[in-house]
Amino acid sequence: MIKLLVVSDVHGDSSSLNLLYLYNQDFDYYLDLGDSCLMPYEIAPFVSVKGNNDYGYNYPPSRIIHTKYGDIYLEHGNHYIDEEYILSKNALIFLSGHTHKRYFYQIDDKHYVANPGSLSRPRDNNYGTYLVITIDENDVNFSFKEFKE
Image (cartoon, rainbow, N blue to C red; front, side, top):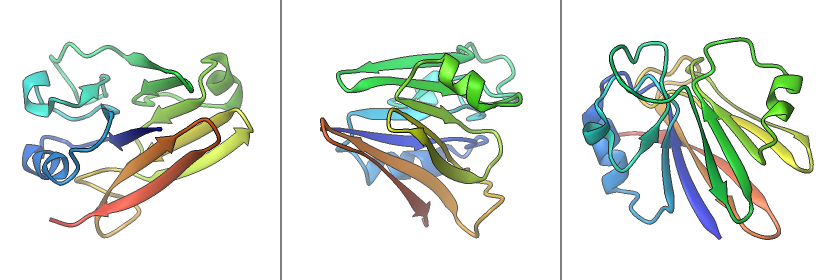
């Protein structure tokens, strides 16, 4: 089994990101979907993609995380995302941020789509949110968590 912790739209709130990591150190992957507005050394061990507010940061626009269970595609989501675009990435899990609203849906038995919401500036909740994903040979599970300092 592998465990992933996914955040997005931190917008410079390094203290919340550091607390989240401090309380969750048993994950295999720490993923940031952009608009961290932080330098790579400030968000480590999270790996990031570039968001529309990440001016001057040298993050890639997208990443693919290869796992033994399938690929995980990451992008910020600055443009219209439709099912054809998602399927073109040929990934088990397609992750994007940008909206500050959490969502999850399944296209078919091999393609999942999720947005963790925003850790520091949610638009759909009173508290920031992040996403926990667990994957094993039989199942993929998604669990949204509220972040309360």
